[in-house]
Length: 253
Image (cartoon, rainbow, N blue to C red; front, side):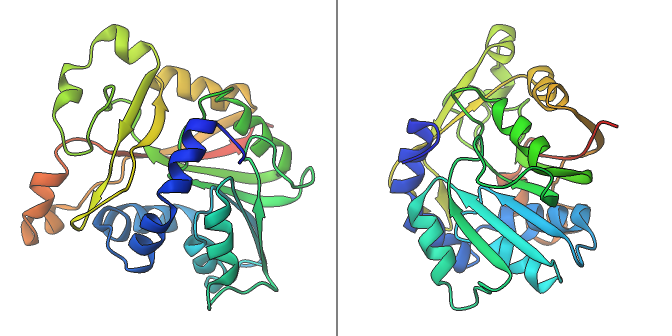
């Protein structure tokens, strides 16, 4: 098992849960909020060589191939996800390669990809900034890094995604390191074990990125539209505070 042990262990035990959720298109947050925002900021990927960092069961890699990416490398520290990605009936193994590995020690050559996407990749616990240096290493000078993750400003320790405890987040907790352990309830299905993530202040998170040699060119906070909230009141109960942050970054000249 690779990567941070607590993170990797939880994801391995939850792997089949997430495979079923993704392939059943059961996660409203993913299908209706984060995926549209992510694909919008990616834009045209025709002819690009791409790294899907933390690829899971491979759905994003398959989508990027459909959008004419030249080649997609998927890397994940969960062996169950890699096997699922490789054996999916729609996997295009002529233009994709799925690697069992750590995003903080990528099995790719220097300057080998045009785009790195880290899609809802849990924050590292040991040496959390190391992955950004690896992303910088494998990116070509004209490349881009796109990061979509949980919003660092609104998660208290042991926060549940739909809870209100973030409002009581103290200064010491926010500017410290918050460990969040939570089970996910998606469409009435509950993950077998709690996932483990660590959250840092926005200041600390941005510093990890810039110290690796990146500049941030765009920042978005994906959220349901006014029309979605009007048409489906579910959003008013389940999206009561910012949940996601999306960054577009480029190597510093």
